Length: 511
Image (cartoon, rainbow, N blue to C red; front, top):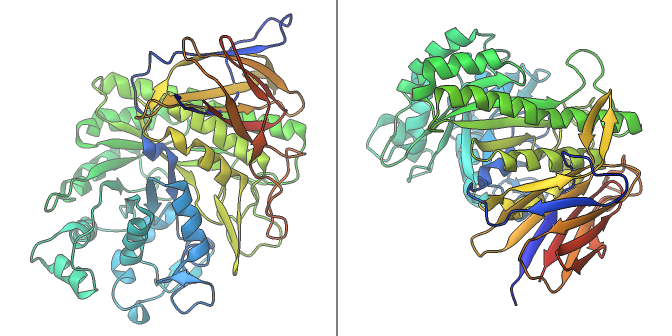
């Protein structure tokens, strides 16, 4: 019996005639050609608030159960997600981080002030060795964000040597002295971060020259091959991308892009949990704008790189709300079903443009912004966004399948967007996965899914939803928003008929 896995997310582009009342998705299973880069499902961990200290790292002497200092509950939850890549140490922190402060015996490491995030004093107990060991434990690629803003060329060059050299060199021997005989593998290297802002307030022309200089001395050692990523634009700054592609396009393998679903950078950004329907619809419209932003940056890249050598790396994205009242950790925010929809819709868009989008890193992994996991001392809870990533991981490394959607529209600020979004893929075993979400907060959606000539005998599934769009998980009530069994799909002659409740994300399995 042939088995087809289906994870379905609803949000379309055309409007059906009101006479039918049924939306339609047509999946072109024979037209897939681009593999969905698994790194699109990447994560980001910055020295910010309690992301690292208390979120990932508690130290070997902590009463919180841990493995060599990494808290077990978080470690196990991240392993379940099969995260493909982890970016570190920033963010803005990266361009003030001097890596030699974080190596050697922990009791001898110097403390530093985290001037970007509240002047918190850090003891540097989590440094290079701890990060690369974590990546090995998770089975993910490390993505290192190098210090260009306040660091030197020599400093960055020696860091690469420390990490990747197998020779009898000073930095390789220093690594051995610190307990690591074999070099680590490092593929992804970010040459600076937000160089237009916290990474140095540079012009694109000035940064272009710096990139050329710094990247020259970041060498490949002993079979390690660096994938060098230039510090790219913030959302709508197309001039930055144009300048870098023109000046250094042939010297980089990737260029970053940052896009946050945020109301603005001055004043209140709004509550993560206290919002109304109009706030929710605004959020959906704002997060969907990333498709137009991605398309415009890709058009510039196509102009200078028609052979698609340079990848677009969306290495910071997600929601940004006001810090949770009463919390003492910078940028700590709750995570509701609304955030889960931002994750679902955004990942659908990245899947669609996987030919050029080679990586994405949601901000951030634990206790900061749109986190997968929240912790408070020994307590841990998984967020609705975590469950979206868990449902969507079936797309990693699979072939993207084109699809057409006909559905109703929703309106926010006089802008229309589709009530349904979908993403489909075919994996190496020939299994098809579709991720589905109904964005409409009030109305269920009846959807016919045309699967062409695929023969299906039965369907089962799970659903992620809640009684209200502002529902979220807490340490006392960790199951307010969790996946449950779904029975609203049935096999019909052309494929599937699915009735999706309002504000729901669905995953289906077909047999």
